[in-house]
Length: 143
Image (cartoon, rainbow, N blue to C red; front, side, top):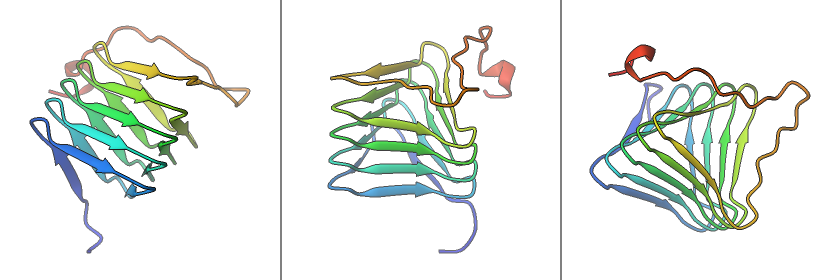
């Protein structure tokens, strides 16, 4: 692989599954986009790591499912964006970790679901949950 930017896009119900501790890492602004009901499933401790401003975007009902202790880690300003009813589901102790200013953004009815003892924890004294004014993709430079 060269050092250029890589993009993985799942269109029209495409599915990417990571089984049995499989790992997908997005480094140096890599992007994973799930469009039109695309699904990313992390099974049996599968891990998705977003490093150095990596971005995961769920568009038009795209779904990220974390099963059986699957983990999503956002490092160094990594971003998870849920657009147009995108869904993040944490099943059976699935984990979302936001490190070093990692961001979870829920746009236009985006959903975070915690199933079977799921927990949302704010551990830093400066951590906070906030509900900003309604914004649309267009107002944020997205089309």
